[in-house]
Image (cartoon, rainbow, N blue to C red; front, side, top):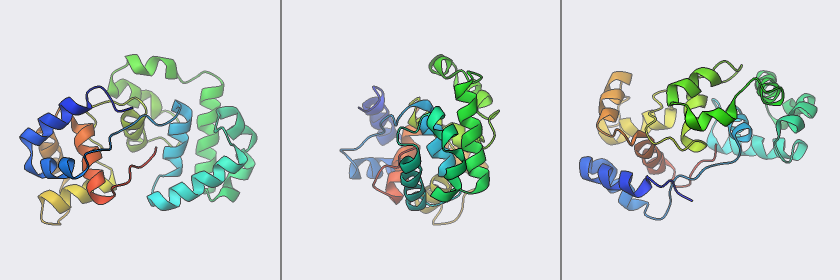
Length: 204
């Protein structure tokens, strides 16, 4: 089910930005949808760090063979088998550390819906292997926050360069300035720019 703000955001972005208007109209029947439980979403994001979407999907499917429900408890039990699923040793350690944070209650997932974006990010980046990009993916895909602009995301960088800068890589400052015109719907703009590169929505 799409977020309740989705149609309002689409209308605003179509009115403000001709490039986004074209992309949005080209993808009329798909929308952002919440993906999984908080732990599962974060673990999947760790798997996807610095590899292609297709490779991440393949690795994640193998992880599910050893931890079918992808719960913290299952991941901890399977932690020594994770590298054989295609994860680097470091990513396997990150997922185990994340699982420990959830299992021992040192992470406050129940409070996240009531916290602002930066407060959630500050808590998440205390976990090994979770940097700002992973936290931002969580805000977009799990908490469905409407106004996240993930400047470190390669797909967003590529799409902005392609559509707004004649194929040249945009600077962070240029991306930030462009994104300011999309507020308070920067997550929605980002999602549609991703669709311009890959029409199939990514799961995180």
